[in-house]
Each structure stands twice: as C-alpha cells, then as structure tokens.
Length: 113
Length: 110
Figure 1: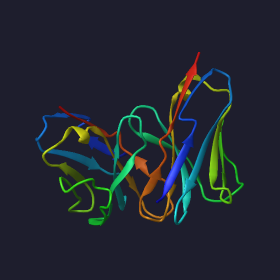
Figure 2: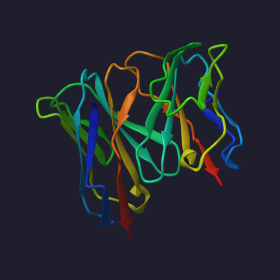
Figure 3: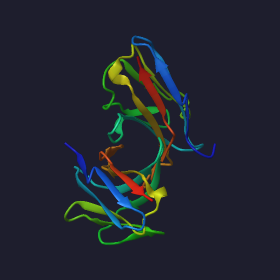
Figure 4: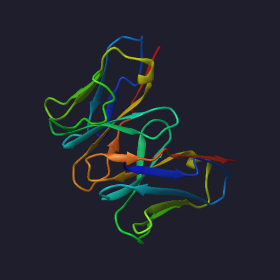
C-alpha cells in the first residue's frame, strides 16, 4: 500500500481482556518497529523486526506483550490481560532498511477501562 | 542510558513569529537525528541530519546538527496556524531503534 496501515484505529478493552493490534507496513519494507506513546510523551520503543525475525524485543514492558511478523510483512502486537497502564497509542513504523527515515502509521489508540 | 531532551516542552506564539526548537542527545552510537511533526497520531518525517553544520531546509522549516555539542535545532519562520503540532526529535543510535525525545508542543495562534 501507499503507507503504513494500522487497525483498529481505536480499541476500548476491559481490564483483563486480550487485544491484538495489526500493522500493514509499506510493501517491501524490511524493517518494522512498534512504539508505545503515552499521553504527553514521545514514542517509546517496544520491538523491532527485520523481515520475519524479531531482532530486538527489549522494549516490551512485560511478558503480557507479544509481537509477531510470521511472513515478514504484516505484524501483530498482542497484549494479554490488559491493564490500565497499557492505555496508549501504539505506533507502527516501517523502513526499507539502511539510512532511511521511517514511515509511521496513524497508530491504534488503546483505552483500557 | 541513551537520552534525548527537547526544549521547550510547550510553546505558544502568534502567526508570523519565528520559533526555534531545541534537541540535545546522549547516545552510545550516533547514526542520524530525525525531526518529525505529529499532528494527530502519525508522526510525519521532516528532516534527517547526519553531518554537522549542514543546514537542511524545506520551505519555512530548517534544521541543523552540531555533533560536537550534541544538539540540533529546528527553526520555523513566519509561523502559521497549520504549524501547530508536536515536534518530535529522534536519534538513530545503530541500536535498531530510535530514541525519541518528549516532543515540543507548538501552538500558533491567529
């Protein structure tokens, strides 16, 4: 597609519910990143994929967070047993790799009630 | 720990004013510094800076990097209400991710 597409745009989850957030990167982009942006703060790194390989997951805040990119294109960020502190905008970005700026999606705003 | 600091955190100006946004950083392995404009949810790319002293310019926006003093500035001249946004500074630290600053929230009043 022309840009990075994320779905859903908005998600309200009850505390304890599992959620799955989807990211469709730009076709052919090798690198894919997930960021979490709390209200009033800059994005914070969660995890990074190069093709289907998850090369860095050091930013995932707990073992309730899980990300996958099985075929090296679409990625899913899953949050199990959501907590209120998980409420944030989750941004996905992709890049062709190398010294290129990343293109961000519009994000998914998750609200846990 | 890698860190990016932006100042001011918030700024209110009137149309026609010129603003300067600051970004300083401490990272282990610097590769590039990027500026993004975030209006609603998706940060949009403005500039990538890799070399000191070379100004990047796009219309009323310009930016420059000082790798010795570890900072960058983003200038916006003749501001317009459409410039109202959060301006994010990020550093690519070869760590396969970006380190973002907290952003500067710019409000341009008519």
